[in-house]
Amino acid sequence: MGCSGGICTYVCDTCPKGAVSLYSLWNWTSSPPAVHAYPNVEFRSDRLPLRLGDLLSLNVSASWAFGPATFSEAARDPNSPEDLAYIDSNNVQANVVLDVFADEDQEKSQTPSKQKYEFMVWVGQFGTASQPVGNRTPRDPPVIARINNIDFTLWNGTNSNGQYVYSWIANETLTHFDMDFAPLIGFLSQEEGVSEDVYLGTIQFGHETFLAASQMNFSISSYAADITTNRQTGDSTSKPTASLPVATKVSAASQLSLFWVDPGWSVWMSGVLFFLGRIRSNAVICVLVLVLSIRSVAAHADCNVEAFCRATAS
Image 1 (cartoon, rainbow, N blue to C red):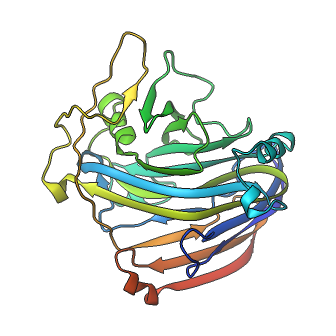
Image 2 (spheres, rainbow, N blue to C red; image 1 turned 180 degrees about the horizontal axis):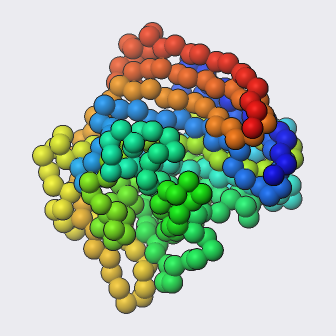
């Protein structure tokens, strides 16, 4: 596969709330298109690794933008006609996803490429090359879950690393969202045969970059995540409630039963956010690491930003 291009990712830890705090500039030309980098923010918590059966909530909120670097910040809205027309006419291939990795082994669950499972939630999909694993064998009938009036369609398959991949794809581009994604992960245990004893080890939110002839700009202006477990509340994940946040469209005549407990409260954990670009080809990479305590504003004084660029060889 021939490839040329590059990516640099930048982070601002002193920017005011609502301002762009992370952005990636990138362009790739390759045939066929493939994922060359994944600039992302990684949530780290003392709660991880976490047994899937102990998960009560995974609340994630984010605001992001994507478009050509020549556009102003305000114009980089993939839902706007101008931005969408540029993306379509220039054959831009990319996505925006929440990525959760898991394994039966606690240590492996936090070891890249060693995890057995990958659970994805797609909130943005651009181009025909950006397709979920298993897209050539669609489910019949499809499995569709609903959260906050947004439909997510489930796809699954095995990737080139031998990982079992489950992808929930939103039916619209969500540049601003605040959702609890735990029901989507819980569904995989209750209906897809994924054991409750697998450990969720890595949680990331970012941007898979495939193809763009001109420089593109992906940015995040806000991001927050928290996780609640039944070890915190003492509740059981198998207790049914009437206010189920997930609806399904498996078929017109069937209903899916999920079990859910309202956690009632959540705890912010101290953690580390990693902003990085993963490279698999000849390119330039910028890696920025922001170390911080999410729990306390006072801990902001302890933040340390390290940035460097290096050439990589395939």
